[in-house]
Image (tube, rainbow, N blue to C red):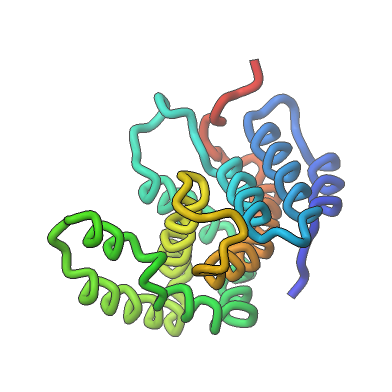
Length: 214
């Protein structure tokens, strides 16, 4: 499966960008953070964070434009991406590159939000919810329910993102390294694919850009 780096995507962007559309700002920002991540080889914490910012640049919308939580934003954005993914590139990526990584990520309780809700005192049966989530993920992968599988994967990675961004992890910690490393490796392939699909559908309405240039 062909992969794309920031240089390729930047050249493609320069050839097809149109006028002063908000999508131009999104793509420009996303590629800049992708390039940053590609230049980081020895620090998976910073690589993950840079890739998440690139991803965030692709989907984040002005808060006043639509009142949704992060999971709802994921769902809308992912559905749009998968609809435009006519060559099933997301499925091929997850099936050919990530099956083992996805299984380990999905089964890891430390990136499952209800586990932390329980540890914060919420009365939630996180064991049961985790098993349901694992079963759903396997079903989505085998039945090519790409949008639903991506939602689960990104929901897990969002927990990793929160741990890093909100000071819930030690820099270069030896604890729970697997989810950071796997997350960064997944995002390093997912983010360029997301950007490329957006470029190929640059006339699509990708929403009001967050913090527009003024």
